[in-house]
Length: 261
Image (cartoon, rainbow, N blue to C red; front, side, top):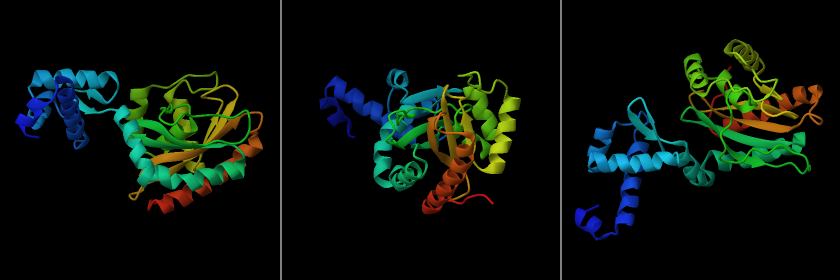
């Protein structure tokens, strides 16, 4: 935008425009940019760029890691409203509905983004007592079924990095407390192709999840069903696992993804 037009704007509006220009530029760089290079590309003084970035960082629109600025998870949350109109969230609707109808429990979609797992869509079951995962909320990696199934199908190096970054979450007495026990669970998850959260995330709640894959066979997220333990027995766990796996396979195919052999 020409400088003479920027000068006509109020200080507040100009700050918004400059902040958006920083977000746009960072969205083009998956590996992020250091301050001086980012400021140069958007034609701002480094001090001005830094002030705007720290403001954006407070609300998680950007993040600062290893000397570089990167897009933050809140930018993804805002962008998910566009995603619903065109891709995974929109595509997931019929599959989430099928899962809810066949299991009688609430179904969920979570996607991997920037080393985090975010819930993006849900179909609630009609039961009064049900498990809810608010769209936009982050799923714990090591004690949720969606988190564990995604870790299980990632390259080991990436999974180890994400576990080290997030830590092993101990939210209940049934949560994993060591990476060794977690990896035994992940190995079993990979073999059966679905993950089980047996009251590891919340007391009294169980969840079963299967992965979704992209065009190169990479895990991009997961579908799950969740509900109270009084309704989801051990027998239900096995049958729900097969249902979620089948529906995840179907959705992966619809997305143009490749399910691993």
